[in-house]
Length: 309
Image 1 (tube, rainbow, N blue to C red):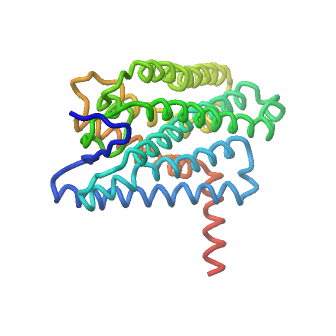
Image 2: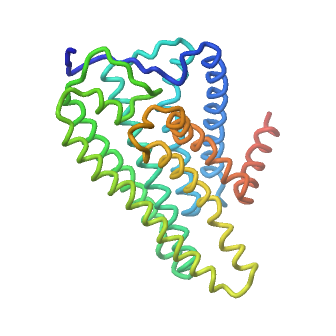
Image 3: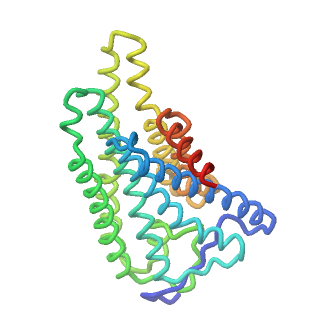
């Protein structure tokens, strides 16, 4: 079998059955549009309502922006494959998709960690919170997150671009993920695999440990609050964020922490759809449905638009 530095690939997608493809296309197009609209409305609410100009909502706005890009990295190609049954993708297109997928996945991870630190500071050090979470520091935390995600993904993509791959290969997935690409390579992938292990520790396990430690301190601080009403008020500010953390990490673990024998299984595809499309779609609704400030802002914004019409 021939090897090439610039091969072409074929994404097999979610199904080869025409009826299933039509159903999946309609379903995922609706989910994609719903998520796009939800994240866009949340961004507009946070940007236009002065009551939401706080560190917590600033980070939430960044997360919504990232989720807009995240779903748009993989879903349009998935929908095209479902509609046309043509999963052809060039090597450069595959690398570009993998690069931006890695950037926004890492950013989701890092921003959830930053939001956990923000909640820890607000609950465990309430008097010092305005001094610790200044606009400058919030902006710096977000800038560092973007810089780390872009730099790490760029290094990994450049190393991957130097490999040779078997030509005219089918990828049993609906987007260009790292695992299938390494499996199709006819070069020595040891350096890339080592880098994956290092990055998994730095950008995967470390942020999760930081989130776990933050919530351990939060729960310890809440347990010392004497009144039940005070406990509920403190936990209410964390419930939405904790829901997003559980949803994000559970789907990622389901997709990647698996034995080799289950690779490309229906369960893996389901988990991949969950964390690339469903989870980013649910995030704005988790916050808007469980947060009085966001709901009030959306009502004011939509009411104003309706009155103008």
